Image 1 (spheres, rainbow, N blue to C red):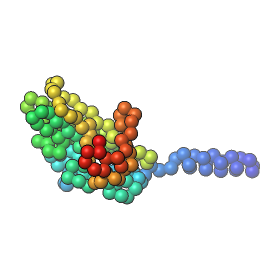
Image 2 (cartoon, rainbow, N blue to C red; image 1 turned 90 degrees about the vertical axis):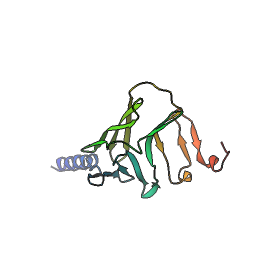
Image 3 (cartoon, one colour; image 1 turned 30 degrees about the vertical axis):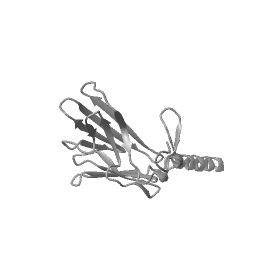
Image 4 (cartoon, rainbow, N blue to C red; image 1 turned 90 degrees about the horizontal axis):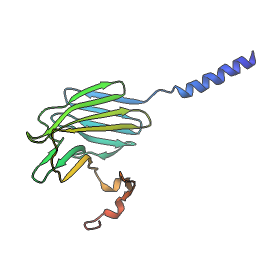
Amino acid sequence: MIKKTLFSFVAFFYLFNLCTAQTFSIKNDKQSHVITFGNSKLKFVLTYDHQCRISKMFVNGQVVIDTSAGIYSEIKTLNKNFTTLKLAASPVISVSGNVINIGDIKYGDDNKMINESWKFVINEPDIKFTLSRNISKAFEVESVSFPAIEFNNVHTWEGAFQGFGGIAWFYLFKEKLCT
């Protein structure tokens, strides 16, 4: 009898540790066109009234993004600048469980139409952000931000991983002409 009770307790304790609740929150204020979402470490505020951008970002309670731009997409050509900071129409939002899908993020002009979709999957250890982009036809660009991120202060971070495996150390770029 003692062995069965001990086994049951150990099995219950093990399963309890595996089944801890996910702590995430998603609040969509449709009237203000703002979604606030996050977990215990990260919190985002996404604004979608004729725009699509992360307007605020908190890391461990500290505000790291609270600018007029924040996190957004941008494509610059020689003559024009296309961005998700100003859209002709508001994007389409859908929330299901811990997933936020934002579709019909359309920007550009009659000759160069860009259509994006953003997806956020919120879990306790992380928030995964997937951005997909379709372009109506090929065109020449000067720069592409996929996405652009404008922090309140460059000194918030000590470094950033680059897509090719390198690291940019921000403390080296404190002043003009440091690059």
